[in-house]
Amino acid sequence: MNTANITQSAAAGRLAENVMHFARVLRGAGLAVGPDRVIDALNALQVAGVARRDDFYWTLAAVFIDRHDQLALFDSAFRIFWRDPELAARLLRLPPVRGRIAPERRESQIPERLAQVLLPQRRTRDGAPAVERITFDAALTFSARESLHAMDFESMTNEELAAARAAIAEFKLRLPEVPTRRYAPDARGARIDLRASLRASLRDGGATIPLKRRSAAWRTPPLVVLCDISGSMNRYTRMFLHFVHAVTNDRDRVHALTFGTRLTNVTRHLRYRDADVALAQVSRAVKDWSGGTRIGACLKEFNVKWSRRLLGQGAVVVLISDGLDCDAGADLARQMQRLHKSCRSLIWLNPLLRYENFEARPAGIKAMLPHVDEFLPAHNLQSLAELAAVLARPGEPAARFRDEGAPAWR
Image (cartoon, rainbow, N blue to C red):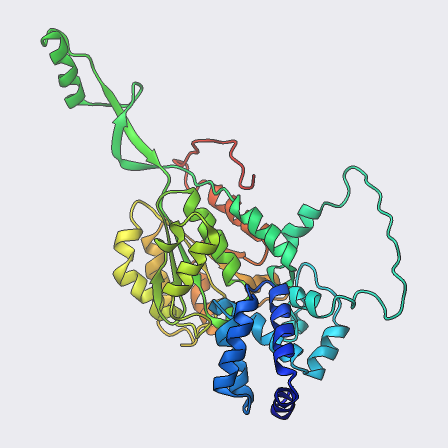
Protein backbone atom coordinates (compact mmCIF):
# COMPACT_ATOMS: atom_id res chain seq x y z
CA MET A 1 0.00 0.00 0.00
CA ASN A 2 1.47 3.34 -1.00
CA THR A 3 1.31 6.53 1.06
CA ALA A 4 -1.88 7.74 -0.61
CA ASN A 5 -3.69 4.46 0.05
CA ILE A 6 -2.55 4.45 3.68
CA THR A 7 -3.80 8.01 4.13
CA GLN A 8 -7.13 7.22 2.44
CA SER A 9 -7.53 4.14 4.61
CA ALA A 10 -6.92 6.20 7.73
CA ALA A 11 -9.38 8.86 6.60
CA ALA A 12 -12.05 6.26 5.83
CA GLY A 13 -11.68 4.70 9.26
CA ARG A 14 -10.29 1.38 8.03
CA LEU A 15 -6.77 1.80 9.37
CA ALA A 16 -7.56 0.28 12.77
CA GLU A 17 -9.14 -2.76 11.13
CA ASN A 18 -6.20 -3.21 8.75
CA VAL A 19 -3.66 -2.93 11.57
CA MET A 20 -5.62 -5.54 13.51
CA HIS A 21 -5.58 -7.94 10.53
CA PHE A 22 -1.87 -7.28 10.01
CA ALA A 23 -1.24 -8.15 13.67
CA ARG A 24 -3.12 -11.43 13.12
CA VAL A 25 -0.83 -12.24 10.19
CA LEU A 26 2.25 -11.63 12.31
CA ARG A 27 0.83 -13.72 15.14
CA GLY A 28 0.09 -16.55 12.72
CA ALA A 29 3.66 -16.33 11.42
CA GLY A 30 5.08 -16.87 14.90
CA LEU A 31 5.48 -13.39 16.40
CA ALA A 32 4.10 -12.70 19.89
CA VAL A 33 1.59 -10.01 18.91
CA GLY A 34 -1.47 -9.60 21.12
CA PRO A 35 -4.38 -7.15 21.39
CA ASP A 36 -2.36 -4.89 23.67
CA ARG A 37 0.19 -4.30 20.93
CA VAL A 38 -2.55 -3.48 18.44
CA ILE A 39 -3.76 -0.75 20.78
CA ASP A 40 -0.20 0.49 21.27
CA ALA A 41 0.33 0.55 17.50
CA LEU A 42 -2.80 2.62 16.92
CA ASN A 43 -1.78 5.07 19.65
CA ALA A 44 1.70 5.31 18.15
CA LEU A 45 0.29 5.96 14.67
CA GLN A 46 -1.75 8.85 16.03
CA VAL A 47 1.51 10.45 17.19
CA ALA A 48 3.74 9.54 14.23
CA GLY A 49 1.11 9.93 11.53
CA VAL A 50 0.72 8.03 8.26
CA ALA A 51 1.79 10.71 5.80
CA ARG A 52 5.08 8.95 5.03
CA ARG A 53 5.45 5.26 4.31
CA ASP A 54 8.74 5.01 6.22
CA ASP A 55 7.15 6.49 9.35
CA PHE A 56 4.28 4.03 9.07
CA TYR A 57 6.67 1.08 8.57
CA TRP A 58 9.01 1.85 11.47
CA THR A 59 6.17 2.74 13.83
CA LEU A 60 4.63 -0.69 13.39
CA ALA A 61 8.06 -2.32 13.55
CA ALA A 62 8.86 -0.60 16.85
CA VAL A 63 5.65 -1.92 18.40
CA PHE A 64 5.39 -5.42 16.92
CA ILE A 65 9.05 -6.53 16.94
CA ASP A 66 10.83 -7.77 20.05
CA ARG A 67 14.08 -9.09 18.60
CA HIS A 68 16.32 -8.09 15.74
CA ASP A 69 16.01 -11.49 14.09
CA GLN A 70 12.26 -10.86 13.57
CA LEU A 71 12.86 -7.91 11.25
CA ALA A 72 13.18 -10.01 8.07
CA LEU A 73 9.87 -11.77 8.68
CA PHE A 74 8.17 -8.47 9.55
CA ASP A 75 9.54 -6.84 6.39
CA SER A 76 8.22 -9.63 4.17
CA ALA A 77 4.82 -9.57 5.87
CA PHE A 78 4.59 -5.76 5.60
CA ARG A 79 5.43 -5.65 1.91
CA ILE A 80 2.96 -8.44 1.11
CA PHE A 81 0.09 -7.43 3.37
CA TRP A 82 0.07 -3.72 2.56
CA ARG A 83 -0.79 -4.46 -1.08
CA ASP A 84 2.38 -5.08 -3.00
CA PRO A 85 0.83 -6.79 -6.06
CA GLU A 86 4.12 -8.03 -7.51
CA LEU A 87 5.16 -9.87 -4.35
CA ALA A 88 1.68 -11.33 -3.87
CA ALA A 89 1.63 -12.61 -7.45
CA ARG A 90 5.12 -14.10 -7.09
CA LEU A 91 4.07 -15.78 -3.87
CA LEU A 92 1.13 -17.40 -5.64
CA ARG A 93 3.44 -18.83 -8.31
CA LEU A 94 6.00 -20.27 -5.89
CA PRO A 95 5.57 -23.95 -5.04
CA PRO A 96 6.20 -25.12 -1.47
CA VAL A 97 9.92 -25.56 -0.84
CA ARG A 98 11.41 -28.51 0.98
CA GLY A 99 15.02 -29.46 1.59
CA ARG A 100 17.57 -27.39 -0.28
CA ILE A 101 16.68 -23.94 -1.60
CA ALA A 102 17.44 -23.53 -5.28
CA PRO A 103 20.18 -20.97 -5.96
CA GLU A 104 18.01 -18.98 -8.38
CA ARG A 105 15.45 -18.35 -5.60
CA ARG A 106 17.75 -17.00 -2.94
CA GLU A 107 16.41 -13.44 -2.99
CA SER A 108 12.78 -14.01 -4.02
CA GLN A 109 12.09 -16.84 -1.60
CA ILE A 110 9.20 -16.06 0.77
CA PRO A 111 9.23 -17.74 4.21
CA GLU A 112 6.95 -20.76 4.12
CA ARG A 113 5.39 -19.95 7.50
CA LEU A 114 4.39 -16.50 6.21
CA ALA A 115 2.95 -17.91 3.01
CA GLN A 116 0.99 -20.44 5.05
CA VAL A 117 -0.71 -17.60 6.93
CA LEU A 118 -1.32 -15.19 4.04
CA LEU A 119 -2.34 -17.65 1.35
CA PRO A 120 -3.51 -20.89 2.94
CA GLN A 121 -5.56 -21.75 -0.16
CA ARG A 122 -2.61 -21.70 -2.59
CA ARG A 123 -2.02 -25.43 -2.40
CA THR A 124 -5.32 -26.15 -4.18
CA ARG A 125 -6.73 -24.65 -7.36
CA ASP A 126 -9.41 -21.99 -7.11
CA GLY A 127 -12.84 -23.59 -7.09
CA ALA A 128 -11.48 -27.14 -7.16
CA PRO A 129 -13.01 -29.49 -4.62
CA ALA A 130 -10.77 -30.87 -1.95
CA VAL A 131 -9.56 -34.34 -2.79
CA GLU A 132 -9.52 -36.82 0.04
CA ARG A 133 -6.16 -38.49 0.40
CA ILE A 134 -5.84 -42.10 1.42
CA THR A 135 -2.54 -43.07 2.98
CA PHE A 136 -1.26 -46.54 3.66
CA ASP A 137 0.76 -47.37 6.73
CA ALA A 138 3.63 -49.71 5.91
CA ALA A 139 6.91 -50.60 7.53
CA LEU A 140 10.18 -49.12 6.27
CA THR A 141 8.43 -46.30 4.39
CA PHE A 142 8.77 -42.52 4.46
CA SER A 143 9.45 -41.05 7.91
CA ALA A 144 8.27 -37.55 8.87
CA ARG A 145 11.17 -37.23 11.31
CA GLU A 146 13.71 -37.97 8.57
CA SER A 147 12.04 -35.37 6.35
CA LEU A 148 12.29 -32.80 9.15
CA HIS A 149 16.00 -33.52 9.59
CA ALA A 150 16.67 -32.91 5.89
CA MET A 151 14.50 -29.75 5.63
CA ASP A 152 16.09 -26.32 5.38
CA PHE A 153 15.42 -24.08 8.38
CA GLU A 154 14.28 -21.23 6.14
CA SER A 155 11.63 -23.33 4.38
CA MET A 156 10.00 -24.60 7.60
CA THR A 157 6.51 -23.68 8.74
CA ASN A 158 5.67 -22.72 12.33
CA GLU A 159 4.85 -26.30 13.27
CA GLU A 160 8.05 -27.59 11.69
CA LEU A 161 10.14 -24.92 13.42
CA ALA A 162 8.62 -25.88 16.77
CA ALA A 163 9.45 -29.54 16.09
CA ALA A 164 12.99 -28.58 15.06
CA ARG A 165 13.48 -26.54 18.25
CA ALA A 166 12.21 -29.47 20.30
CA ALA A 167 14.71 -31.77 18.57
CA ILE A 168 17.54 -29.29 19.17
CA ALA A 169 16.56 -29.02 22.85
CA GLU A 170 17.24 -32.77 23.19
CA PHE A 171 20.60 -32.45 21.48
CA LYS A 172 23.39 -34.35 23.22
CA LEU A 173 26.92 -33.57 22.17
CA ARG A 174 29.64 -36.15 22.76
CA LEU A 175 33.22 -34.99 23.05
CA PRO A 176 36.15 -37.40 23.43
CA GLU A 177 38.10 -37.19 26.65
CA VAL A 178 41.75 -36.17 26.44
CA PRO A 179 44.52 -36.52 29.04
CA THR A 180 45.36 -33.48 31.13
CA ARG A 181 48.53 -32.50 33.00
CA ARG A 182 46.93 -33.33 36.34
CA TYR A 183 47.07 -36.77 37.92
CA ALA A 184 44.41 -38.76 39.74
CA PRO A 185 44.69 -41.86 42.02
CA ASP A 186 44.71 -45.05 39.98
CA ALA A 187 45.45 -48.54 41.33
CA ARG A 188 46.88 -49.56 37.95
CA GLY A 189 48.65 -46.31 37.21
CA ALA A 190 52.17 -46.27 35.79
CA ARG A 191 53.44 -43.58 38.20
CA ILE A 192 54.02 -44.03 41.93
CA ASP A 193 52.46 -41.32 44.10
CA LEU A 194 55.15 -40.73 46.74
CA ARG A 195 53.10 -38.34 48.83
CA ALA A 196 50.10 -40.71 48.99
CA SER A 197 52.43 -43.65 49.74
CA LEU A 198 54.11 -41.87 52.69
CA ARG A 199 50.73 -40.74 54.00
CA ALA A 200 49.46 -44.35 53.89
CA SER A 201 52.58 -45.62 55.66
CA LEU A 202 51.85 -43.40 58.69
CA ARG A 203 48.74 -45.42 59.40
CA ASP A 204 50.93 -48.44 60.29
CA GLY A 205 53.55 -46.41 62.10
CA GLY A 206 55.95 -46.50 59.17
CA ALA A 207 56.52 -50.27 59.39
CA THR A 208 55.45 -50.77 55.79
CA ILE A 209 55.14 -48.42 52.84
CA PRO A 210 52.25 -49.41 50.57
CA LEU A 211 52.82 -48.09 47.08
CA LYS A 212 50.09 -45.82 45.79
CA ARG A 213 49.87 -45.21 42.08
CA ARG A 214 48.43 -42.49 39.90
CA SER A 215 47.77 -41.78 36.25
CA ALA A 216 46.91 -38.79 34.10
CA ALA A 217 43.40 -37.44 34.62
CA TRP A 218 41.08 -37.45 31.60
CA ARG A 219 38.56 -34.73 30.83
CA THR A 220 36.57 -33.44 27.89
CA PRO A 221 38.16 -30.32 26.35
CA PRO A 222 36.39 -26.94 26.47
CA LEU A 223 34.07 -26.03 23.61
CA VAL A 224 34.05 -22.47 22.25
CA VAL A 225 31.30 -21.44 19.79
CA LEU A 226 31.68 -18.26 17.71
CA CYS A 227 28.33 -17.41 16.05
CA ASP A 228 27.91 -14.88 13.26
CA ILE A 229 24.79 -12.69 13.72
CA SER A 230 25.22 -10.40 10.70
CA GLY A 231 22.48 -9.58 8.22
CA SER A 232 23.54 -12.29 5.77
CA MET A 233 23.14 -14.89 8.53
CA ASN A 234 19.77 -13.59 9.74
CA ARG A 235 17.81 -16.54 8.31
CA TYR A 236 19.59 -19.09 10.48
CA THR A 237 20.87 -17.14 13.49
CA ARG A 238 17.98 -17.96 15.83
CA MET A 239 18.16 -21.71 15.18
CA PHE A 240 21.92 -21.65 15.73
CA LEU A 241 21.40 -19.87 19.05
CA HIS A 242 18.91 -22.58 20.04
CA PHE A 243 21.62 -25.11 19.23
CA VAL A 244 24.23 -23.23 21.27
CA HIS A 245 21.74 -22.94 24.16
CA ALA A 246 21.14 -26.70 24.14
CA VAL A 247 24.87 -27.44 24.12
CA THR A 248 25.58 -24.86 26.85
CA ASN A 249 22.99 -26.37 29.19
CA ASP A 250 24.08 -29.94 28.47
CA ARG A 251 27.84 -29.70 29.08
CA ASP A 252 30.21 -27.78 31.30
CA ARG A 253 33.03 -25.56 30.01
CA VAL A 254 31.07 -24.34 26.98
CA HIS A 255 31.63 -20.71 25.97
CA ALA A 256 29.53 -18.85 23.39
CA LEU A 257 30.33 -15.55 21.71
CA THR A 258 28.50 -13.69 18.95
CA PHE A 259 30.08 -11.38 16.41
CA GLY A 260 28.99 -9.04 13.66
CA THR A 261 30.69 -5.69 13.84
CA ARG A 262 31.77 -6.37 17.44
CA LEU A 263 32.38 -9.34 19.72
CA THR A 264 29.96 -10.16 22.56
CA ASN A 265 30.26 -12.89 25.18
CA VAL A 266 26.78 -14.41 25.72
CA THR A 267 27.75 -17.48 27.76
CA ARG A 268 26.16 -16.17 30.94
CA HIS A 269 22.89 -15.34 29.18
CA LEU A 270 22.59 -18.80 27.64
CA ARG A 271 22.79 -20.44 31.07
CA TYR A 272 19.04 -19.88 31.57
CA ARG A 273 17.23 -23.19 31.31
CA ASP A 274 14.31 -21.72 29.36
CA ALA A 275 15.34 -21.16 25.74
CA ASP A 276 13.01 -18.18 25.18
CA VAL A 277 14.29 -16.41 28.28
CA ALA A 278 17.89 -17.11 27.30
CA LEU A 279 17.45 -15.79 23.76
CA ALA A 280 15.64 -12.70 25.06
CA GLN A 281 18.63 -12.02 27.33
CA VAL A 282 20.99 -12.48 24.37
CA SER A 283 18.90 -10.11 22.24
CA ARG A 284 19.17 -7.40 24.89
CA ALA A 285 22.91 -7.92 25.36
CA VAL A 286 23.91 -7.96 21.67
CA LYS A 287 23.96 -4.55 19.97
CA ASP A 288 25.02 -5.44 16.42
CA TRP A 289 22.19 -7.69 15.20
CA SER A 290 21.68 -7.98 11.44
CA GLY A 291 24.42 -5.50 10.62
CA GLY A 292 27.67 -5.82 8.76
CA THR A 293 30.36 -8.43 9.32
CA ARG A 294 33.93 -7.66 10.35
CA ILE A 295 35.22 -11.18 10.85
CA GLY A 296 38.90 -10.25 10.90
CA ALA A 297 38.46 -7.47 13.48
CA CYS A 298 36.25 -9.67 15.71
CA LEU A 299 38.69 -12.60 15.55
CA LYS A 300 41.53 -10.24 16.41
CA GLU A 301 39.61 -9.07 19.49
CA PHE A 302 38.99 -12.69 20.46
CA ASN A 303 42.64 -13.64 20.03
CA VAL A 304 43.79 -10.70 22.14
CA LYS A 305 41.18 -10.64 24.92
CA TRP A 306 39.67 -14.11 25.15
CA SER A 307 42.05 -16.64 23.63
CA ARG A 308 44.28 -17.22 26.67
CA ARG A 309 41.40 -17.66 29.10
CA LEU A 310 39.07 -19.79 26.92
CA LEU A 311 41.35 -21.87 24.70
CA GLY A 312 43.28 -23.65 27.44
CA GLN A 313 43.48 -27.44 27.77
CA GLY A 314 43.06 -28.09 24.05
CA ALA A 315 39.74 -26.36 23.41
CA VAL A 316 37.63 -27.13 20.33
CA VAL A 317 36.36 -24.07 18.42
CA VAL A 318 33.17 -24.13 16.33
CA LEU A 319 32.88 -21.13 13.99
CA ILE A 320 29.40 -20.50 12.54
CA SER A 321 29.58 -17.99 9.70
CA ASP A 322 29.02 -17.62 5.96
CA GLY A 323 32.44 -16.00 5.54
CA LEU A 324 31.08 -12.84 3.88
CA ASP A 325 33.33 -10.13 5.31
CA CYS A 326 32.69 -6.39 4.88
CA ASP A 327 36.42 -5.74 5.12
CA ALA A 328 37.11 -8.00 2.12
CA GLY A 329 39.18 -10.38 4.21
CA ALA A 330 41.58 -7.77 5.57
CA ASP A 331 43.87 -9.39 8.20
CA LEU A 332 41.49 -12.36 8.26
CA ALA A 333 44.01 -15.01 7.18
CA ARG A 334 46.46 -13.98 9.91
CA GLN A 335 43.82 -14.03 12.65
CA MET A 336 42.45 -17.39 11.47
CA GLN A 337 45.94 -18.84 11.52
CA ARG A 338 46.49 -17.60 15.07
CA LEU A 339 43.12 -19.01 16.18
CA HIS A 340 43.88 -22.34 14.53
CA LYS A 341 47.22 -22.64 16.31
CA SER A 342 45.64 -21.81 19.68
CA CYS A 343 43.01 -24.58 19.72
CA ARG A 344 42.96 -28.34 19.33
CA SER A 345 40.49 -28.31 16.44
CA LEU A 346 38.76 -25.58 14.41
CA ILE A 347 35.44 -26.49 12.77
CA TRP A 348 33.70 -24.10 10.39
CA LEU A 349 29.94 -24.35 9.81
CA ASN A 350 28.79 -22.46 6.72
CA PRO A 351 25.10 -22.29 5.64
CA LEU A 352 26.17 -21.53 2.06
CA LEU A 353 27.23 -25.16 1.67
CA ARG A 354 23.53 -26.03 1.33
CA TYR A 355 23.92 -25.07 -2.33
CA GLU A 356 25.28 -27.90 -4.45
CA ASN A 357 27.26 -25.54 -6.74
CA PHE A 358 28.95 -23.66 -3.91
CA GLU A 359 32.31 -22.12 -4.82
CA ALA A 360 34.77 -20.35 -2.50
CA ARG A 361 34.92 -17.10 -4.45
CA PRO A 362 34.54 -14.34 -1.77
CA ALA A 363 37.81 -13.08 -0.36
CA GLY A 364 36.77 -13.86 3.22
CA ILE A 365 36.06 -17.51 2.48
CA LYS A 366 39.34 -17.91 0.58
CA ALA A 367 41.25 -16.45 3.52
CA MET A 368 39.55 -18.70 6.09
CA LEU A 369 39.51 -22.08 4.35
CA PRO A 370 43.25 -22.96 4.65
CA HIS A 371 43.10 -22.68 8.44
CA VAL A 372 40.17 -24.93 9.36
CA ASP A 373 40.17 -28.64 10.17
CA GLU A 374 36.56 -29.31 9.09
CA PHE A 375 34.31 -27.39 6.69
CA LEU A 376 30.67 -28.44 7.11
CA PRO A 377 27.20 -27.17 6.13
CA ALA A 378 24.79 -25.80 8.73
CA HIS A 379 21.25 -25.35 7.44
CA ASN A 380 19.17 -28.22 8.85
CA LEU A 381 19.05 -30.76 11.66
CA GLN A 382 21.02 -33.29 9.64
CA SER A 383 23.97 -30.90 9.37
CA LEU A 384 23.97 -30.48 13.16
CA ALA A 385 23.97 -34.25 13.54
CA GLU A 386 26.99 -34.40 11.21
CA LEU A 387 28.71 -31.86 13.45
CA ALA A 388 28.05 -34.13 16.44
CA ALA A 389 29.61 -37.04 14.56
CA VAL A 390 32.70 -34.99 13.73
CA LEU A 391 33.13 -33.81 17.32
CA ALA A 392 32.66 -37.34 18.63
CA ARG A 393 35.47 -38.61 16.41
CA PRO A 394 38.69 -38.76 18.45
CA GLY A 395 41.21 -36.25 17.20
CA GLU A 396 44.23 -38.26 18.31
CA PRO A 397 44.99 -41.83 19.49
CA ALA A 398 45.03 -40.78 23.16
CA ALA A 399 41.38 -39.69 23.13
CA ARG A 400 38.69 -41.87 24.63
CA PHE A 401 34.99 -41.76 25.59
CA ARG A 402 33.41 -42.03 29.01
CA ASP A 403 30.15 -43.54 27.64
CA GLU A 404 30.28 -45.17 24.24
CA GLY A 405 26.54 -45.67 23.93
CA ALA A 406 25.42 -42.04 24.30
CA PRO A 407 23.68 -40.99 21.06
CA ALA A 408 23.96 -37.56 19.52
CA TRP A 409 20.17 -37.33 19.31
CA ARG A 410 17.78 -38.85 21.84
